[in-house]
Length: 207
Image (cartoon, rainbow, N blue to C red; front, side, top):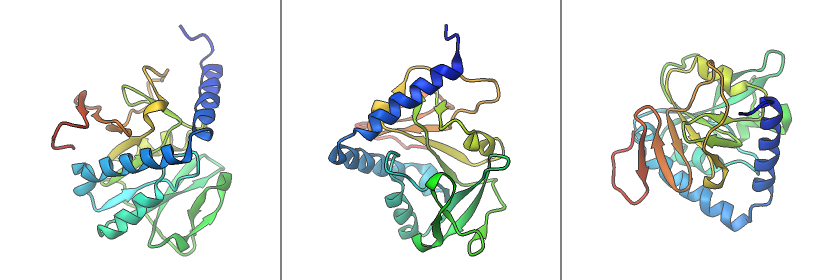
């Protein structure tokens, strides 16, 4: 039994930050490409016109190539802008990387005055980051709760992406925590709702 969940999560964040910061560049690029390839074969990607995604930092699973791929495939791309006062996020459509600027926590965020605000969260595919995920699709984020709040009101499909060496059997979570619908890493895809595990060598119709 974990007696101090807050301390436990702090230790996990430190552990997985270390793993990511010390990952060989070539290895990271290889895993990023595998993750991107898997995203693009999902029906959840193919069948949605809008992709909601974070803009990755160096230690995160890369989304810059994903964003480029979305534009190539004719999809709309929406990225978050953080509101530090209440720790919420608003998403804005971007049409190029020129629509981004450095903002909260040094993240690249949309230029709010120049980009269109998203008002419809009833559909779409949302790419969800995390320091690590467990096998049930629960995530360990940065600890600020931005995505936890956003996902409560997002009604599309949410996809957690992670490196396979940043997986853990079980994370502590509360009754208001929401697991992702699909969990994906460089080795496998798992649809959480149906608890079905897809090995990468099997040809399946992914959600």
